[in-house]
Length: 210
Image 1 (cartoon, rainbow, N blue to C red):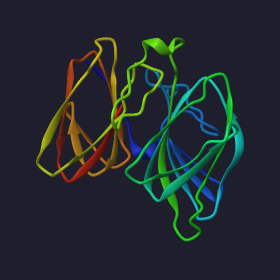
Image 2 (tube, one colour):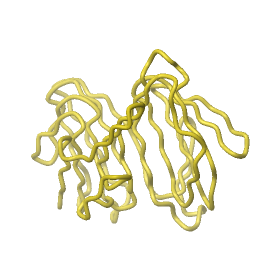
Image 3 (cartoon, one colour):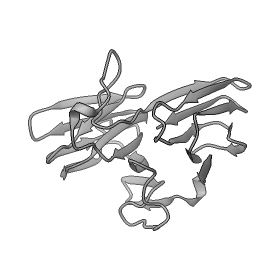
């Protein structure tokens, strides 16, 4: 098994006033040639948007984009008429395909919006991607995104579904022990060459497993 650890304090950071972002991988004004991607995972950002602010219409293509609000709600609109609100406890997938234009806003003027944003490289052929199901979003890649809440002193085992896949675990909150390493809020660990990963919660914790 091989592992790489990305500590919270090693991430890139950008403060545009209305938008504050932490970048686990190279993104925008943050570039580190050692931190480009983990397998098909290209971007993992923590964004906070002030009340009443947001991104004006902008393009994306050739990427599977995942939004997971951790505080507040994010409103999305796109150039083909889709309008949706994604609240804390929910998630949204955007398959950008050959190209699309969308906007995203925090329309609650009194509450900051915090969310995790991921970009995952797509497969060329959607017929090879996993199937969605009840309460499960479909993504055009052999990738799974899951969240778990653990009570202090408990543990879970994550089994890798495909032998050639690794697993990237981001600590949303709390303290956990993974593969012999202690990880804390906003730390992350990437593991390859393994069949499963055990996660032990040293305190109440939430994790994002990719």
